[in-house]
Structure formats: structure tokens, C-alpha cells
Amino acid sequence: MPLQQAPVRNVFEYLTQDRVIRIPLWQREYSWKATEAGQVGVLMSDLKEFIESGDSEYLIGSVILCQDEEKSHHRLLIDGQQRSMTLLILLMAARKFIKNEGLDVPDGHPLFDVVPEIKACISAAKDEYKERIYMNQQNANKILEELYLWSTASDTVNESVLYNADRQNPTEQNLVNVAKYIYQEQFKKNKWISKENDQFLLAINKVLHSVRFVEMNLSNQSEAIAVYDHINDRGLPLSSADLIKNRIFQNVSDSDFPEVSLNWNEMTKTLSGCDIATIKDPKFLLRSIAAAETGQKITYKALTQHFGDKFKKDKDDPIEFAFDLSVCATFLRDYSETSSHELHGALPELYFPNSLGSVQQYPLLIAARNIKDKKVFKRVIKQIANRTAFYTLSAERTQEFESLVPKWAKAIQDPNLTIAKADEAYIENANISDEGLNRLRSVISELNYESSSDRAKIRAILARLSWILDEKVGKHATSSFYQYYLAKKEKDGTKAWDIDHVLPSKGNANDPVIHGLGNLILLYPTDNRSAQAAKPINKEAHYQQNPLYLTKSLTDMDKLVPKDKEKVVEFFKSAGVKELKWNLETWNEESIKHRFELYFALLKNDLTTF
Image (cartoon, rainbow, N blue to C red; front, side):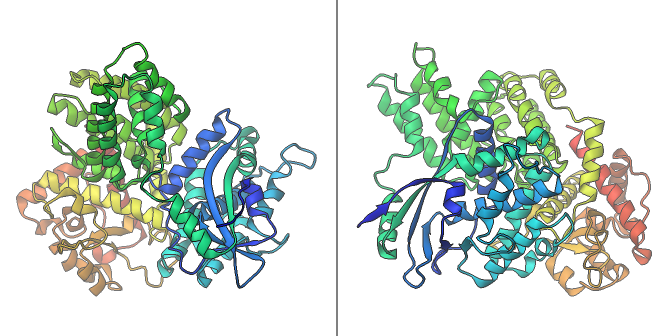
């Protein structure tokens, strides 16, 4: 099995070789998730940490290539598609961001070459698109070319590629979603690296020249696949988790180590079964625990020293610590998958930030896991859920939220925490300002149903508001809170919800008002599809008969059971809404505006009460 060569190449070298990297036909879809908790979010977070560190190199892993037997200039990419495509799209988004934010520097500046090098990475031709990576689906290649053109254009120009995701297959959708996520959520909202003082250019330069691949080149496809299978064999290789374990517990006695190892393996097994990529890595759990202990952000690099020091002088019992890790892993799994706590039960408030794709809440939840008093625990959970949902929806900078998490986590880790102390910790570390609420209002007023990432936020908001209103009335539409968030029918037959445009979108495809939050409501799929193009007044029966009271509130409230109407009206008043200024018969832009004001008032009330 002749391995021709295994050079270590940086991103610039990897993408600018005189070749075309081709994805084989049998390769799976491009599937990395474009969310904070997904693989793209994890990569962006890892790159950010590397850029801000003093480290000179970041090894992102290996790629396996082999000669394409049909085209001598092509190399088949056997392993590394997800990372390669994500980095290519990142560079396209970076090119667009540099152009639109005016970050270019003059000739002679030390960073002048960054933009030409980005261009060389994303196209083999100087002034037009010539693929560096060739996908195994023709339409996907067209999407890449469209994204290339999008990367050259001003904001709002060539944007159509971003809003046709529903008419694309999974790979095509994901290419677009990743571009939108990196550009709009990471770059434009300043969540990644600041654009001030050439910091963004410096960051991209570091990605180009200091992020490295081990590139394995094989003679043919069968040999390359054999090497891939060998590398990914789950039998003997030592995982990064094992390496961390051995370094942390290197001073533990031989008699203690087997039990420590048993608990550690139990922890890694539990985490590996989690759905969220970030949580699968034991380092995330270790960082969460360390943050609560120190009140400071702990880098991955400092983890082994922090925990290793605990056992050097018999400060802590390693067996007890390892057992606690396995317990923490169970808490983390339950928090993320069922929004529940082994002792304190279901946590409906937690499902809201979970459904928004956030992972920032988990270090706080780990810190609060041992609070004994159920009332105090539930209050802290609501505070964490409120603050995390606010962070996700208001476009708060990631750096700002991350900076408050360790201090807040340290303040709430006491098992005997009181309500007074919990509130004090919240106000001191995480209180939502009036300025922040104004920003929240502005951001959610621009949510657009046509954007898949916005649509997920719209669904989460409508589901949360529907649940809390039903909770106030005392009549739930489903047997479980998580079912309010369902976008697809479950295998057991549990119904999902469609997002209905009150004023139909047909004929108004590009109208942001029609696709805005104020014109949207949850409705049964059968009702939505049978009356898609109907006028609002002709859908009145569907709204009235819907079990969700938020949906019912579109119609004449006098048709509600008097006690139910009283509860709905009282709840609206408590949120500052004293009058419902819409009518399905005359539903128009003004009605949509008033409906948005109701949603914002209810959301604001929810996020600021606990």
C-alpha cells in the first residue's frame, strides 16, 4: 500500500495546489450543521480560540487523497470533505465581509496579500470562477459558483441563492446555510473576531497559514479507502479523550487508576451518545466544571494543568472526581436531550434556548446541577434559560456572553443556594439591560421566514409563546412541552406544526413584511395546506378551532369560554398589551405590526420574569 507522501500543508497550500479536488460520487452529503452547537459552530469556536491564543500552529486533522483514474488533473477526496468544504465557504464569506466592511489595506501593508490569497483559494482563475473543489452533484457545483459570485458582491446583491433553500437538496441547502451562518451570524454580528484594527485580516491570515492538514496521497481509490478504514477503526486507536484522561490522572496511584478509568469511560460513553457535536467532546464538560470552579474561562490547553494540579498533592480524591464526571455527563445529556433533571424533573423553560441551537447555557447548568432546593433550582434554570435565549435572539456578541458565564457559574454552584443569592448572582452577572431589549426588538423585527435560520428562530418563539399562554390558561394542546416545537410529524403519529402566513405569501414572495414574525402563527399542517392561499378571514375557523390559545387570539376573543378569555386577556395585560388592534377581515400591514407588538411584549415579559 504505497503511501506516496504525507506533507503537512496549511490551508492556503492545500487549496492552491495545481489540481482539482473532487468529491467521489459515493461520498455522503455535505452535512455539517450550521448552528452554534453544530459542527460548523464548533469549528468556528475552535478557530477563534486558536487565533486568540499564542499558538503558532493548529492541526485540523488529516485528509486522504488519491489519483482520479479518469482525469489526471483531479484528486479524489476520500476523507476530509466536511472540513474542506467548510473552510472553502468560510473563505468565501471572509472575502465578502472584507469587501463590504471596507477592511482592505493598501499595497505595501503587511496584510495586503490576504485578499489575493483568499481569491486564490476559492478559485483557480483570477477574475472568474474555476473550481478548487468539485462536488459530486452538478447542482451543488452551481451553488458553489453562485456563492462565489455572492462573495464578490455588495450586501443585498446576488442574495437569491440564500433564499431558495427549500428548492434545493440537502447538500445544496447546507452549502447555503453554512455560508449564511458564517457570514451573517459569525461575521456580521461580530461574534467571531473583531473587524477593528485589522484583527479580522490577521485572523484570516492565521487561518490561511497556520491551520494545517496532514495530507495523505495514495496511488488509487482502493488503497485510499483501505487507509481510511484503518485510521477510522474504532478498535485500538487512542482517542483524544484518553490522552486527556492520562495527562490529568498521571499522578494517581496504580491502585486508584482502574476505577478512575472505569468512571471516565462511562462519562465518555454517555457523552458520545449525545446529539450535539459540542457536548460529545469530554473537553467541553471539563471546561464547564473548571469555569465554575475558577470563575474564569479555561482554554483547552490549560485543562490538563488545572485538573492535574488537583491530584498532585492529594488535594482531591481522584475516584470521587471521576465518579462526579460520569454523573455530570448524565446531567448534560438530560439537559440537552430531554430538558430534564434527575431530581427536579422536567424543565420546559430550558427547551426554548435548546431549540435555538445554543450551547452557552450548559456550563451554567452544570454549575447549578447540585442545588438542593427545588424552588431555587427552578428559578435558576429559568434565569439561565432567559439569558441564553436573549443572547441567541438579540445578536449579542459571543465574547460578551462568554465573559459573563464563568463568574455567574461560580456564583450559582453552591448546593445550598438561596433565592436571594440566586437573584443577586443574576443581577450582578447577567441582568438584561433596556438597551439590550431594544436591540432584541430590532433583531426579531427583521426575522424573515424565507431564511431557514430565521425560520428556526420564528418557530421557537411561536412555540414558546404558545406554551406559556396555554400554561396560563391551564389547557395544553399537547401532552409534552417539546411537542410545541415539532416541525415534523413523529413516528408515533404525534402531530407537528406548520408556520402559517396569516396574509398569504403567494404573490408576495419577496415582501419582508409578509414573511415577518407578526404575520406568522402555528397551525396544524392539514389546516395550513388546505387554506394556504385563502384570505385571513376565510381561515378564521381554522384559527378558532386550533388548540393553541396564541393562535385562537387572532380571532374574536368573545368566542372563547369566558374563563379562558379572562385568563388570556389578563396575561396580555400583565405583559403590557391592553388592546388587540387587529381584525382578520381587514388584516393588513398595520395588523401585522400590532401582532408583532404582542409577540414582542410577551417575549420581553417572559425573558425578564422568573
